[in-house]
Image (cartoon, rainbow, N blue to C red; front, side, top):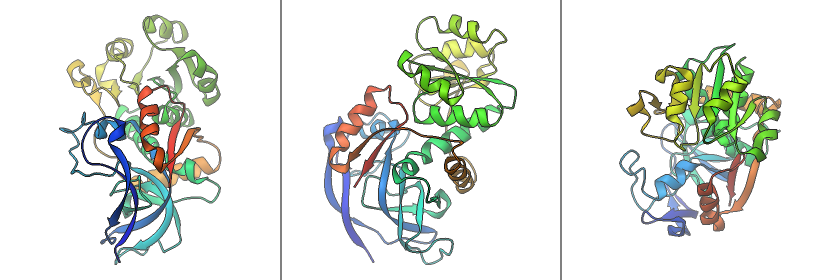
Length: 307
């Protein structure tokens, strides 16, 4: 039956102060859906871009809206045709109804079992990062032995992309501020400082050249990435929608077999192949603070909200 729960909502586009904690009714799960009692919700840059209205034309939302996609929690109820999960199962994945809520609906094809060894916060930090990283690597056609450059490698998607690429046999160069160089080195990437003079610094550590590049920062590096790869088709941006004007690509769509990707990520996280640092955890009441911190950039890993 329908239930009410606390949720973070925004009634208008604007800065972080438009977020407020209120009580909302949650619909019953329909065919192919679960209703999840959320234990943790991940914060992604796309959340505040939707909230401030900058994505309104690309990703329109109906107001009032609940932000967030990444969730981890316990199955509270299931749709009439769902047999893969039962009430009480621990799961993680992508919410269909907004993740910043005590209860969230999710489609069966975007949810996977959460291993007991993975804490709630880390499970909630993984879905968007792992599915996006997997999707981008597939679109780039990255293969073992190639050299991949990730601009903005210390963030959530960058962190996972580095580790997935290394796991698949690629050489990885990651850009970040000097304070994150040891972190990237620990993930298996060669760290390089971003900003002016990037091409020269990359040439110094990769005289053989760069085969493919991911712009995970959106700080204007695309022309340099295209120059370094020599092929705009092997450059993808996660954060700069102007990429097609340079012949590069802007990541779009969702990967196929999302449940399989999430299940693989769960295995890799459980055995330590993939790690995800949690930069900070906030209660739902501090969602606005979490958004402001995310907007500042330079987050190592992920930010997470808890009810």
